[in-house]
Image (cartoon, rainbow, N blue to C red; front, side, top):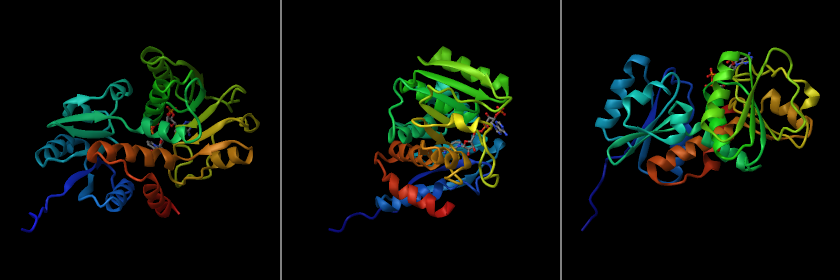
Length: 284
Ligand code: NDP
């Protein structure tokens, strides 16, 4: 007897605005194809007023889950059933997973960063300097702290936003945190282990923009990581490499947050290299 045919794919996707330039669909569908999964990732343009309906639609259609990007990472919390512990601390959700009929919010941005970091160093006991205090910085700061970072110096232009992140890290994680208001070129302290650019400086098309740092304070054995995925090789990484530092690009974070999302939705750990190659090809 022939096997019953099944024309119902596992559905996942993304709700964001603007959505057109988000490359995640290419990366995740490449993984689905590579692993021969009967699954789809649908990139949806969803504005602020449409988020509730979009989430109810995903629920009604039995989606396995979805990503949320700008401007929904905080607002989506009001439309789902549960939020994972680290996402509660971060205060934002970028990945929703359907578990036993309930929609659960996760934050995979910071976890993706830490997975990428672990390819070159264990965050345990390390001294971090992190530029920025926005959404990416909150996710990275919290996950690095939960992964054992000893201290995180937040260097941010807006003192209020910087102070909020420092208070969050001090109150909700075991790491020590302090704020440096970024109003002049910053000299990175010699004892720093890991330097992170979590600002939007260097993002395409402003590819020549540089962080205001004292150039000679970037030095080995510091590890220098950038969140900017496009272009993968930013001016910061170029400068850090020229000074002999080990560097990590923003593609590593982007790919690994996708790996974690796919694992949540399908139970399969996808091949990160296939996903990275897809993005590299798109950004070349
Ligand atoms: P936010 O708007 O929430 O935060 C932006 C941060 O950048 C703020 O701290 C802001 O400082 C700082 N900043 C921006 N311009 C300047 C400047 N000229 N000088 C000094 N500081 C500046 O953005 P997100 O945190 O959501 O995103 C930041 C970057 O991270 C984006 O480029 C995004 O592409 C990238 N990202 C990468 C991911 C990946 O997987 N690789 C995942 C998520 C984000 P202030 O507070 O003073 O305004």
